[in-house]
Length: 392
Image 1 (cartoon, rainbow, N blue to C red):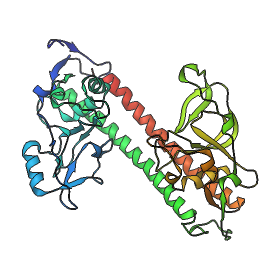
Image 2: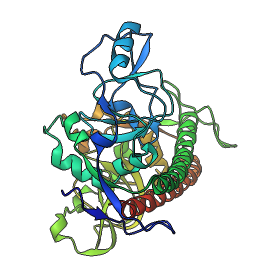
Image 3: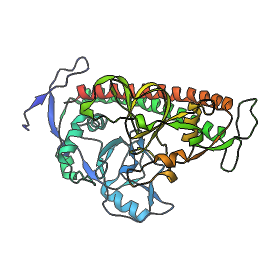
Image 4: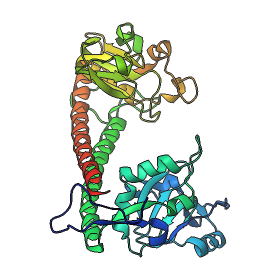
């Protein structure tokens, strides 16, 4: 790439007309990495940050390994981290850049970009979050199961930069957008946490047949019943369609983890519960969802419907979410919930009027969570659109 080449982004703030200038990261910035050694871990000590601690929300300090004072001092002689520096993963999960707002920790297998030089870190952080850096990672990393981006390749990154004044304007704009996203993420997590708390209170504990929190007027013990006595299974109606054969339409096309596409036609029409059969993306929060209307379901999700007069579908969905599904799964990385196993799972259930009350109550939470998720997705999409147009 020629050093004389200049470009400008599609979208700019008013008043900025100068060309962006080509820069090489390792020349413009102090680029380092953390230790590659494996220090001993202790119950007390200094935090050691690895790629697992880098998240969209910043540093995750709740799940860190602790090292000795001696190892901490040794690592920091080579790569001391200060507030204002950027970190991102180099091994395994490459990327997840974080602008540091604290110090007093060490790093391992993590790239460190020091503040200073002709590129502001508040601007550079967004470059690392853009498709520009994604494409660079894809072209320069090595390894398959364990990906690795060499420090030399990070230093060789070519990027176009504007004046310090424009960098500041762009960086502050995205910082405000990131703050909005962070605030919305907290609202979503708060709604999810509140629902989880109510689930614990409104379903009986192990060894008990009454929940701690109930609607007024309900006092009887709950029953223990197998799912085959509560619901009918309609897996026989499922039809998988490869992506190339799907006809675009309005019907949600469901797989193990939710909606994958929208197609013409339908396989089921009514009120159902979909439970991942195989390919679930989360075993702790196993994919179970309530659906209503015309849907198309492939062969990776079980389809249940509460028996009329016996089981409320919305209650069934939350009762299933409230159990630990992992003991019922078979297989390795692509664990499977066999249909016979699923139908023999026992649940604690009250009479149907109480089921309906509980199901409708948690539907309000689900609607709230869906709304907050939609707002979060919208903000993330807006940011991605700006990232695509404000960098070159």
